[in-house]
Length: 439
Ligand SMILES: Cc1cc2nc3c(=O)[nH]c(=O)nc-3n(C[C@H](O)[C@H](O)[C@H](O)COP(=O)(O)OP(=O)(O)OC[C@H]3O[C@@H](n4cnc5c(N)ncnc54)[C@H](O)[C@@H]3O)c2cc1C
Image (cartoon, rainbow, N blue to C red; front, top):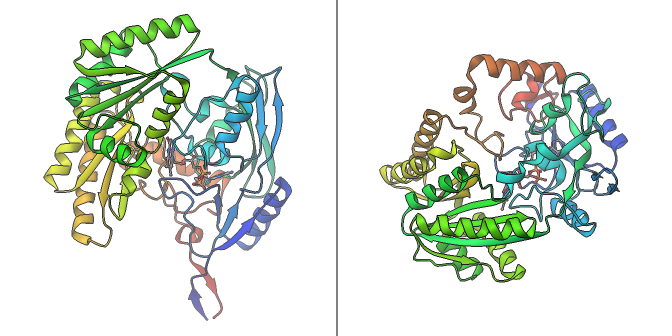
C-alpha cells in the first residue's frame, strides 16, 4: 500500500450531457476536475492539480442563437470572444467586453473570470452582459440560471455566483449574452505626457467633466517602448506616459466629446494630442495597446503581471508607489492598464531561475498589495485570484467574508472537487490533489 500522485487526464467534452457524465464519474470516484477554455488565464486558474481530470471545452464551440428581436446571443463556452463580437457586429449589434486576449480566449473562460477589457470604463465587464447560464453542478445535475427578460427578481441571483467563480463551483456549458446596438461613430485619440502625474490628472479631469469615454488606457514609458519595438505603429517613445482614449456613440456626441477631451488633455500639459485619421489607424492603435503584455513578455525570461486596482483618484499615487517599490528592491517593472477603471497592470520583468531576484520581486509585490489595500483597492480587477493571488485574499476579505465564500463552496461542492486549491484552500483530499492508491 502507498500514496501515489497521479498525472492529470485530459478529457474533451463536446456537449452538456458529456460534461455531465464526466462530473458524474468524477463525483463517484472523488476525482478533482479542472475546467479549461483556452488556458490564457493570468492567475493560474486552469493549472491542473495532480490526479485531476482536465475538462477541455474548446470543442463546445457553436453559436446556438442570435436573437435580433431580444438582442441576445446564445453560445457554447468554447466559442472565442472575438467570434462573439464578430457575429454581433455582422448583425449591426455590439458585444462590448474586449479582453486583450479576445482573439484567443473563450466566452466560458471570460464568464468564469468575469473578464474585463479596454471598453470597461463605459460598458462594464463580462458580468454586465450575462443574462443566463447553463451550469453543470459538481453532482452532475444541469441547471439553467436566468432568461431573456430584461428584468427578473424571482429568488436569489444564483447566476452571479457562477460569474467569476473560476471553475470552482461548476462547469458553464451555455451562455446567454446581452447585445447592444452598434455605436454609430467612434473617435480615437492619443495623448502623450512628460509626466505620469499629468496623465493621471487628465483622467480625473475627463471624468470630472462628466465625460465617460469607452476606452481610457495608459502605458508607461517602458511599456510604450516595448510596444513600439514590437508593433511599429509610430508611438512617441520619448514620452513618459501615453493615454489611448476612445469615445463612441452618436456622431454629434462623439465629435463634441473628442473636442472636449482634446482640450482637457492640452490643459493638463499633454505634449501632443493626436486623433486617429482613419478607422484603420484607430484599430492599429488599439491592437498595439492589446499587444502590451506580449511585447513586455519578450524582454525577460519571466513575466509576472499583476492586476492591482485602486479608486481612480489614487492612480497617480499608486503608480508612483509601484515605481518606488521596484527601485527599493532593484527589480524591473513596467506598468500599463485600464486607467479609466483604476485597473493597473504592474508587470515585473524577471527570471525565475534567479532566486534572489524572484525574492525581491515578491517583496516589491507584497508592498504594492499592502499599499493597494491602504488606498481602498483590490488585488484583482479582472484576472481573478486563481493560484497567483490566493495568499493575498484573506487580507482583502477578512475572516467573515472569506468564511462566507467557503460556505458557498461547501454547499455546492461538498467534496471540494471543482478546481481545488484555487481562490482559497479547503481542507479536503481534493484540495491537495493527492489520491490514495494501491501501489
Ligand atoms: C495577452 C493576454 C491579454 C489578456 N488581457 C486580458 C484583459 O484585457 N482582461 C481580462 O480580464 N483578462 C485578460 N487576459 C486573461 C485571460 O485571457 C482571461 O482571464 C480569459 O477570460 C480566460 O479565458 P480562457 O478561455 O483562456 O480561460 P482559461 O484560462 O482556460 O480558464 C480560466 C479560468 O476559468 C475556468 N473556466 C474556463 N472555462 C470554464 C467553463 N466553461 N466553466 C467553468 N469554469 C471555466 C478555468 O477553470 C480557470 O479557472 C489576458 C490574457 C493574455 C494572455
